[in-house]
Length: 371
Image (cartoon, rainbow, N blue to C red; front, side, top):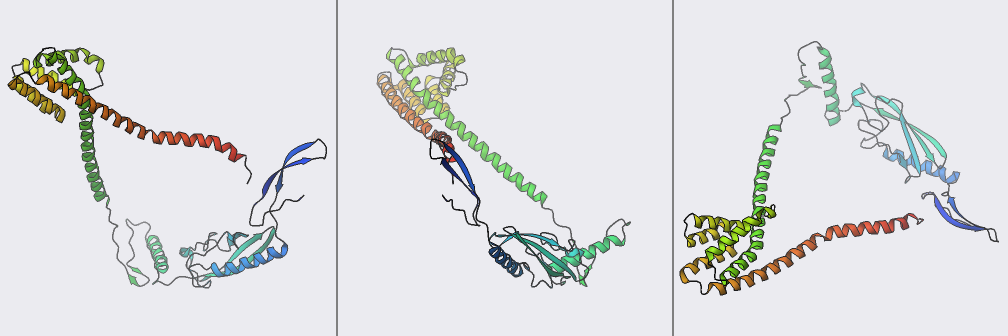
């Protein structure tokens, strides 16, 4: 019949219980169990320990509280979070609530009273102690900043109606020189411009590389169909020139239906056909066809067609049939590789979808769990 309380350092808990009256009546209820409170003795000991911790740490980077020139260390909690502290200072123009010291407002050594309101488990205690803010030594960084501020204020108030502010040449009997801070904006803009130029050049190079890869892939996709059509026409006794003309005519007929799907291989055949119609020899037209495609497969085909002009049509049929088989096998391998790449790219979206499904499945169960 007991529910244990959490220790003072812990937190309140909620326990789901089922209560019955010994007969048929049952009811589910959530019992809120507050954490264990401290006794007066324990709270008093924690408050005392907090004061000792304040004495050891409040000076911060200062050597002592009798010569304060740097910020004080004022924490919001002490004793591992058991004691809460609220700070205030009698002269906030010199020491702010967060412990910051404003030396520009110090004209002479001034005593400021610090007050910490300490609270622990409903028990409170006020801890008050004196702090002396002093004007720092001019040789220190704080002192130089202090005297510099004083000198600038005096110079500004000396001739407020003048056309210019006369900067002080001495800070606490030390000669100083002034110069404008260098502005490197021009160099930064030039550097950014150079970086942007290099990025544009690299981007253009990357774009050209992608275009070459895209064109190469399109050429490889067209190649099996072109070789198959040439093999079919040559096997039917049609010359290579007439085969080129028929392939070009069929492509130009179907071209409106293939907009947005570039076919550089067929485009090269159309150009080669026009060149032969303009009087270019077949051998030269085939060589230009291979150079225009700029691909190993088409260079091989162009050389095969050019040799056919010299050696005759006897071996061309067998060569085209062999090339057709090899090109279709290569196309199968390329399709398999593209499929594997596509499946690899789908791994990340599939993993994200799996994570969403797991969150939807597990989140309700975790929300119903009590800790």
